[in-house]
Image (cartoon, rainbow, N blue to C red; front, top):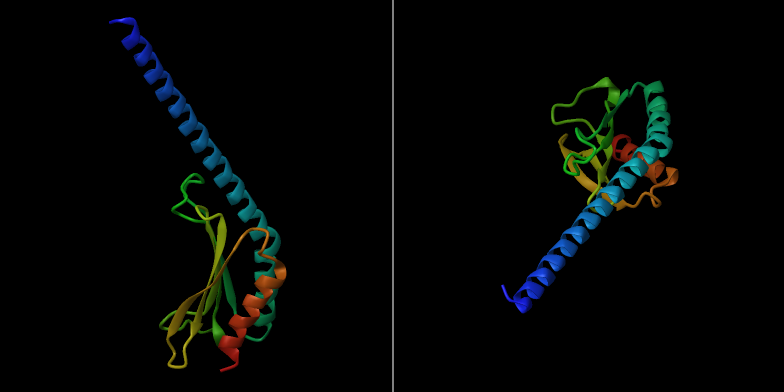
Length: 160
C-alpha cells in the first residue's frame, strides 16, 4: 500500500474511532441525565406527591370515601419505556364502579424529562373519562399544584 493510501486509511480509522468515542460519551451523558431525572422523580414523589395524596386520602376516608395509593416502579431503572408512576384512586361511598374509579396519577416521562399528570373522572352518565392534566418539570411540580389537581378531582366527583 502506498503512503498516501496508508495516510488516508489512518485518517479514516482515526475519524471512525473519534466518532465511536463521541457516541459512547453521548450515550453515557443521556444515561446519566435519565438516572438524575428518575432520582429527582422519586424525590418529588416521596416529598410532595405521596404526602399530598395521603393527606387528601385521610380527609376523604373520614367521610366514607376510601382511597388507594399505588406506586409503580420501572422493572429496570435503565428502561425509559416502563415509567414510574404513582396513582391515587377514589372509591366514592366505598364503591368500586363498573367502568372504573376516579383517579389522579403522576407518571415519569423520562425521555422528555417531565412528569405527566393524568386524571380519570366520572361522567354524568356514570362512565369514566381520562384526560391529561399537564406535563411538569421536576421544578414546576409543587405541593400547591398537586393539591389543586386533587381538589379539581374531588370537585368533579362530589359537585355533580
